[in-house]
Image (cartoon, rainbow, N blue to C red):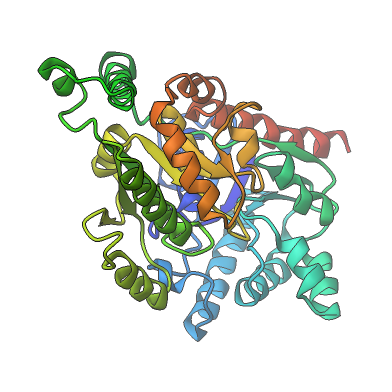
Length: 412
């Protein structure tokens, strides 16, 4: 099978671009860049790296230069169609943003006549709902005409199927995301560390005194509950709800005379300068002063270190295009306590009876959950990661879904 992958890889680095990179790597990369003597795999990928932005702030915005890029990428895709005989077109539709939607229109107008099969991978969700509530009649009609009736719609979870069904995909399959294990040393190093800190917190809350050995095993600061916010720094992703929850939790602990305190590390890039200014002002207030560290955008070893040394991931998102919550999967792999919302696909990532779900836009409930989480041992969550969200399962599931397109075309 030959597959034209019309999607971008990092930079900028976010969940969608990262998963496209993992898919390409798992399927053997861009065939045009492989050594001449390399044997082709079952799926030969021809990658058009359709990158329109170099920075987070520019994603989804309109610039005249982007339209020239659209034309260039489409011409490259059409050239691959005839040069290499590629008939299947893989695409990641945009969320509900007009500039990005109109770009999708142009891509489909130029490329759809030349390819037999289209695969839409719904890494962002909510386009159908956005068109229903905010789109004009013409926008709904044009988008249905250009994006509708694809050969295969790939959803990340059951809630993500909504868009694939709204656009009347001929076939819909669920393929959860999967990532390389960020904690391969979990059993030897991470697990003992996690359990030592949980036990130390439980003893402190029971009014007991810790020995020097116990304090050392708990990294020397068992009184500090390290909370991690790891996502784009936006209101809809839950950044400001997390700030208010940490402030309220610390106030409650102080009033009760508890020896424990919360300390928050915020890791991610700001997309809106106004929100960055608001964040800087808020963390400088007395109730959060010295309790919040901004790490900026992190990746590779720095991200692994944060996952290792944190006790809890706080991700109270209600982002309109949230499709999966890849950061939750990273937290599962690290055995972290996860506090999140029942938004979109997030409930599908955690056990059905998991107690760490909080209502959206409810810092008070999140604050109570933070205090309750001091005594939780979440290391069993790693089993969920190993069973469902490893990189190999993701690539295998994608390959299986993509092969159904070729099989049905041959049968027809």
